[in-house]
Length: 140
Image (cartoon, helix red, strand yellow):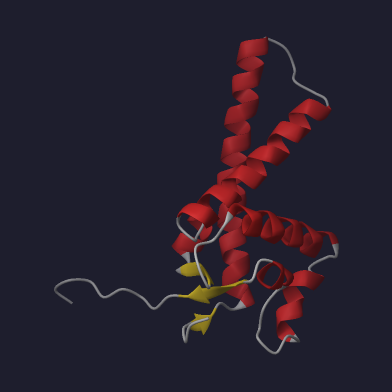
């Protein structure tokens, strides 16, 4: 891809923590909105499905639009690939990320053994996560 520094796992996990907080905020707003409109508790598979779709939409929107989620932005991480990041790549990256979590982090730890330092999500979406250098402020 480029000669930029590949993002270390600690920065990726820090970004994931930030994104978790953002997604929890979205989910809380959704649940509060549904309870307000329905006037009763909201339970069932349809609510879980809605929250799952919101999770995917959060990541797919930011990956395809900016190449970085809010958490990635905070830690100066950027998703890079040969061309524009496509929704099909976002779906593959999302599924690989889920598989990485379901295998207790094996997909993330994979980067320690991979010659290109890429996780399963990087591999399956034909992309990589790099860490951008800090920006110099004007007048500094």
